[in-house]
Each structure stands twice: as C-alpha cells, then as structure tokens.
Length: 176
Image (cartoon, rainbow, N blue to C red):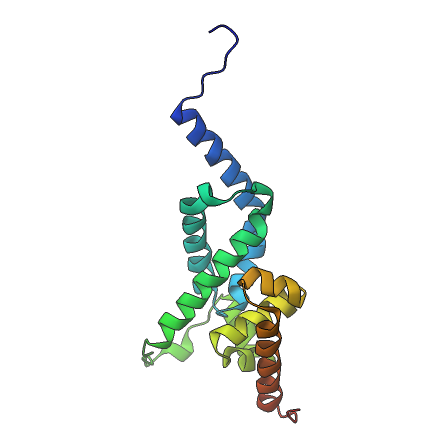
C-alpha cells in the first residue's frame, strides 16, 4: 500500500471541523449584525448567532457546496431569530422598580430605543421584520431575500409591502 493515503474517521472529522470553522469565521460578524437588527437586542443577537452556529455545525454534513455557506447559514440564522421572536411573544415581561436607573451598553437595544423608525420596526411581526432587515439592513435584493427565506418572490414582495405600509402608518405618513 505504498503511496496510498489512508484517511481515518478522525482525520475526516478534523478536516470537516477546519472547513466549518473557516466558513463560519467569515460570516459571524455579518450574522451578528443581522441578528441584532431582527430582535433589536444585543443579548438576543448573541444567543441567536450561537444557536445558529450550533445548528449549522450539526447540519454541516448536509451542505453540498461549502462555497454556499453564507446564504445557507443566513437562512439558519433567520429561522433561529424568527423562532426566538415567536417564543418571546408568549413571555410576559415584568417591570422592575428601579429598572429605569440602569444604563445599558446594548448597542442594538439603544439603537431601537433612540430611533423612531427602530421603534416602529420593533412593532412589526417577525416575518415582516425579517424581510425589512434582510432587504434594507443586509442590503439584499428581493430575489436574494426570497432565496434566503426559501419563499416565493411574491410572498416576499407582499410582506415588504405590508411592512412598509405599517411603518408609514406608525410614523405618521399616509398609507398607500
């Protein structure tokens, strides 16, 4: 067997780990920004990216083309954010007596509190907020948004239309 390369299961796992880490490292900063825009909270963004990284690792073997990691991972992240938003809708928030005295270093939370547009976006449902985030903050075309969400283009256009109409109404503009 001279000259033949013998690949063990451990070698294959280490190679897959290396490929995954390299691909994930290239996407994690953009993923964090996108995750921050969707829930509007730094802690939620960190948790969502972490959850998405774990899901992506567990599904790594199903990715046929490692060059397509970016859109594939973005789809996983958006689904994680959507699930987290839906889960938190069912939670009841309780005000703490001195909560107003605490200053937050939450970059995304402060962005949403300070910006009127951010507050209006925060009022949108998860599906509308995700389309707004992908199209305007991630700067994807509607076709790319449809591909990322695995939705028909017409559905994406409809969600964007209704989201923009709701934002116009919330911001004092007249709906079309």
